[in-house]
Length: 374
Image (tube, rainbow, N blue to C red; front, side, top):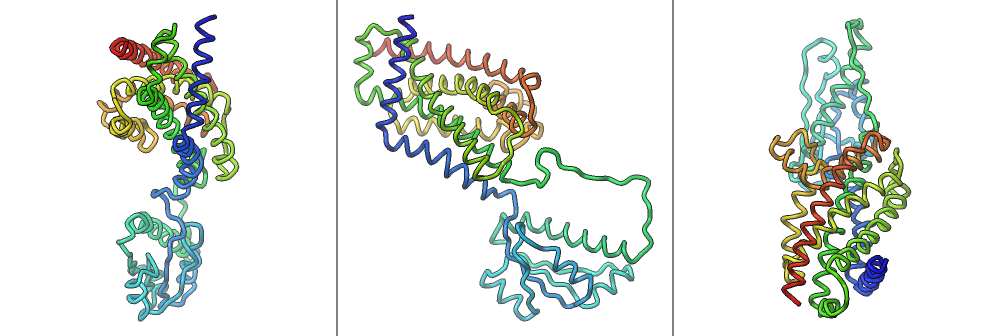
């Protein structure tokens, strides 16, 4: 009981210390509000309000059908221009795409001559240019195919492929980007807060005060783990409810309580990692450098940005030792697909095992550090 009281009071001390750190508080609020919103609404993997112009030299029902196929949110309403305005408008950057429909296009299509449509792309806008090219090709081919079927005998195929997108019917990048950014922020802030708390103790000289008290390294470390973990849980939950659900309108299919439980297990591992890094680094700049080589693999190779199945098998096996891999898996299953505990229990067990290992390693390193300072 005495140990629990010491851990509790030390944790309260950590919370008060964090509350007086203005820059850290600003970082926490920015990361879980503005950063989540900006990342979700500006995902480079989608096309949003791309400016497009169309030169309609055919003036036929088919060309009008193609013009009307471009509409928000992927494209702005197409501007109808003539041939002579095409090059000047591209030069000054008015449009990212200019589609030139040639004369007699409908007649040639119905005659089976396979006419060409010219698409001019401003490649200096790399993200929109690369993605929009395939969007426009798909739209034009779809409209031409539908038009031709209406003017020819329809051939019944033995089988027809009907595509249905599950869990994200509109393939909205906001749904994906907001949750993944929230998960990355949880991992990043939990490591930064615990490591910075330890460095702050050393820089302010308060670690020496703790050494002369009847406290054990376990109590000091556990206080930092539960206090910083509690901060991340509260702020991340608020971000999930108010920013992701309310502001961005992303539907949450599963249990938020089950997700919070998985997040707590994930934080048990990542806060231990933060303590370990805090014992290795001697100053905040060193912590910043260690964050680069620690967070990049955790974020890029955990399955949040790229499916693990597309990675080399060696990388997949190595990343099984990272808590973020299992946290991303359970978060996607719960928040996107509405999975219950009977589905995600292997990830929960993996987080418990990985967190225990990291905690033992961090505690061992922390004891050595404390011993060298005593």
